[in-house]
Image 1 (cartoon, one colour):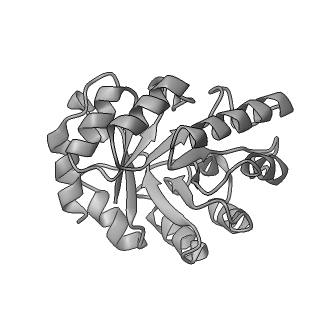
Image 2 (cartoon, rainbow, N blue to C red; image 1 turned 180 degrees about the horizontal axis):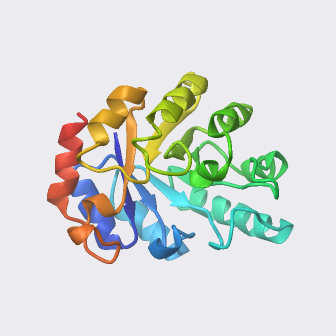
Length: 225
């Protein structure tokens, strides 16, 4: 299953028409993805039928948030749900760079029947395998987007494999960050993960400022069929 990042309405349309199975909707690509506007969410949901997961991230400074920022994120989650998003993408770390269980529980308290992806904040944690066990306590967390920690995603295949084992089917892992047409099949085959997430890999010239190339999307979809 291929998830593709979208930063504008044209991206959204191209991803669906090229065979992408899910969209991660963001703004501010160069900052790693921030919360998109309400109008963008509304329009994106209207123009495609594939699931849209909305990034919930108020700033790019860190993955630690104040109580006020958590309240803002909760409001964004509520709005995304009302606008028809199939899921939200979020992550919150403590000052010790571990899953902030208290604040995560607070964010999840407003989630009502949609998917929740815990994003690559997990890759900043020293032991992402252990973090998977922590996330399993939260039954509203349905997906984890990860490259298996810091460094090259292919070199992290052993860690991704362990994370997949720990998830035990409760949480769906999504391999992302550094996924290319050259490594996508190996990544999924060797780890047992069935979902992949791409951004610049399907853009012209591999630039986040370029248009999505439908041919590249189709190519990846075919590879992982």
